[in-house]
Length: 102
Image (tube, rainbow, N blue to C red; front, side):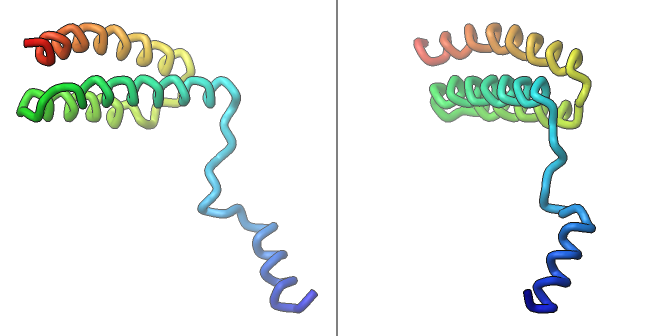
């Protein structure tokens, strides 16, 4: 191996990459997928509303809630937030269905 490649290989092994994300547990991975699924469901529902200030406000509110809880790592708290988010979304969905039909 060339000396420059050998040096690069030794540096990359000794220092963790800043680009690599930390490894997460299976439970965290599953909860993350549930959060992403909820977000997509909300965005799809909001896209059914014709463009209006209400649509923008609902999207801003939903995004704000997700951003506010972005760094939560406790699994129990994540499960609670998903459950709460789903129940809030169910109430919001009733309003959305009224907007789309009406």
